[in-house]
Length: 205
Image (cartoon, rainbow, N blue to C red; front, side, top):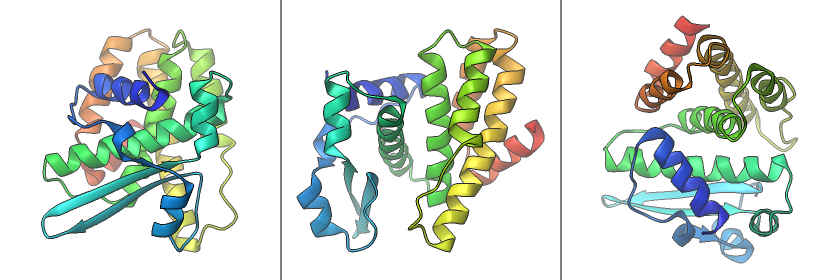
């Protein structure tokens, strides 16, 4: 099984959702992405076109990143690109199937949480690993210089809220070795809309 499929299986199992579609079938390369996008071209990008009751998706992830991951010759940043892209894909499909509206900030927030949890659960889920992950993912976050003001604010808000939620998870569950309970909390969070997610984070922080 290729890396993107493994990540999809992991995210769907984590949240107990089934999209019924294969992310690999929606991946496009450089040429196809360049034909579709005139604006900035990041190394990971979910393209969504809606019309006449249908939604068309395409997922771009830098082919070199996928190649390194499939060859198991990658670093953490490569993995994060893939988790973010697959998270966007799965969440968008799941929301569409459940007839739920979705915003870009909600996509980014969920992806930031998914990156933290995915990386944490591939370790022994100890406080030390959690703290290091939170620092790497959130405190040391760097933003692409070509982001416009609106995009920068959106990424910053997602990062800030994910950081606070991850700190809550660490304190309430990881430090107390309550991982099964943490999974239940994460599944509830996943099914909340943006306003509920932000309210959950505000109460927990």
